[in-house]
Structure formats: C-alpha cells, structure tokens
Figure 1 (cartoon, rainbow, N blue to C red):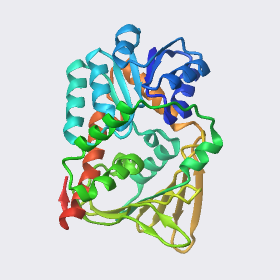
Figure 2: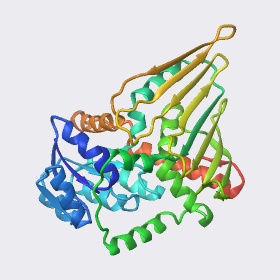
Figure 3: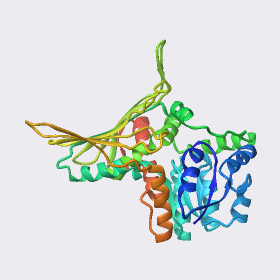
Length: 362
C-alpha cells in the first residue's frame, strides 16, 4: 500500500509516520507540508525520498493509494476534497471539521467516488475501550453514565517524551487558517464559537467514544459553561462545561475542562447499573503503548473490584491498520465520515442547548 502524509506537525511526527514505517506492507511514498524547512527536516529524519510544499503537485505527481491527512482542522475540507477528487482513499485526523455542511460535502464526495473515508478517533481502537464496550453491553439496567475529561498535561508530557521537528508557517497560510476557521463557525452563536472549537479539538474523542458505546442521545437537556477562572494560586483557561444528555430510559453527563497546569491525564467513562459500576480509565495519549484500564466493581454483600489491562497494543497503530484493512476489503470504517459528522452534531447540540437555555434535539 502506497501512502502519502500531508501535514507534518505534532501528531504526524508523534505517531503516524512512526507507525507507518513499522507496518511491513506500507510504503510512505511522499510527505507534504506548507513549511519548507519542516518538510526538509521530516523527510530527512524519516528517510522519505519525495517531499512537497505544494499540495496539488503532491497529489498529481506521486503514485499513492491513500492519504493520511494531519493538516489543521480549518484546512480539512479543501485537502480532503482535493484528495478524493484525485481518487485517493483518505484518513483525516479528528475533528472532521467545524461545519456540519462541510462534513456533508466530504461524505458525499467519498460516497460518489466509492473511496474509504475515515476519521482518526483512535480511542475507538484502544483494546481497553473495546473490552469496556463489550462489558457494558452485558450490563443489565444501566441507568446512568458519566463522560469526564479535564484536559491537561498533554503538552508537557509530549515535550518530555518526544523530540519534534518544527518549521516556520507561511504568513499567508496563518491568515487563511483564521479566515477559514471563522467561516466554518458562522453557524453558531458568537459567544460559544471558542467553546465549540475547544470541544472539537480536545473533547471530540470523548464524544465519539461515547457514541461508539451508546450511539446518539435523543437530545441535550441542558448545558452549563464557565469560560475561565483565575486567582493567585491556579487557573483554568476554559471552558469548564457540564452537559446533561437524554437517552430515553437512561441519562448521561458530559464534562470537560482545560486545566493548563495539570500534568496528569484525567479522562474516564463511568457506567452505572444496580449491580455494577464500570470505569474505563484512559491513559495520556502522548505516551505510546499505554493502555486504557477497565475497572469493574460488583456485588451486594460481598463487593468485588477487578482491574483489567486488555493489551498494550497502541490505539494509533491499530486505527491505521483498520484504515488499510478497509481499503483492501472495501468496507466502511468504524469511525467513518458519517460517524465523524454525528460526533460534530452532538457537540453542536451541546453548545446550542447552552445558548438557547432549552433542550436541543439531535
């Protein structure tokens, strides 16, 4: 399988380029990035012969079956559509985009071309997540679940664990990113656009993992948001958000905050039934081969607590293997473009329930 990588920033260097090199039946045909010095550094470091700063030439001049797209979210629509029009299968990093209509356009284009289109929600491929999902499906009378992510510690741990190449971004690209981001957020009330971006970039993994287990809620009943807090001892840069979701006979809450000072990872899905409590505890994704843990507490008079590590297989690597398998077998990915769009719909309903003060249907 011949693969090209576009967008050579942190996620491409931390995981995708390394994992693609490890897969025996994959050849990295070329890389592309708008930063000329970054392209040179990365292509030299990973021993990739062809490197481009012009995306159109990259698509036209290189023999590739598929594209791994790690560009800025603002540029996903343009780069994904161009790749699909050239007949390339596309893996795009999360989030799919900020605009539901842009998502629909990408989904339609992939369907018309009969190409695999997958969104990189790697938590769905974590062995611990898969184990937890199977156990949750066996739980009787689940009445409540809690999805919790107080985001923090990623950048500090990442910078200690990796040496990442950097490069100058052209000013015209920075300006285009700002304009395109603003365009994609126009469907939302201005006071929640920043919150929505934070949810898409930092919490969409949790929303996607949630719908992978419970599918879509009927509606978002209520959302409360606090945008920032600072005093002499600590601060969080916001937003701090809690949302109540209705699944008919079951309720769920979705919690998110960005706490910059935290170095530890704080991300868990908890599920409650009369007889059991299950916790899926995610590790910091900046650390390779750190598995999610599944903890189960059950019993009445005699309480038993069990902790399971399903596997140390890396979720990022497993999602790439799934993408390549979908191409070979001509099947729909688990985290397809449609799945990415539905995740976007959930996050949109969360912020709309806040601005309206009313429930928001999906």
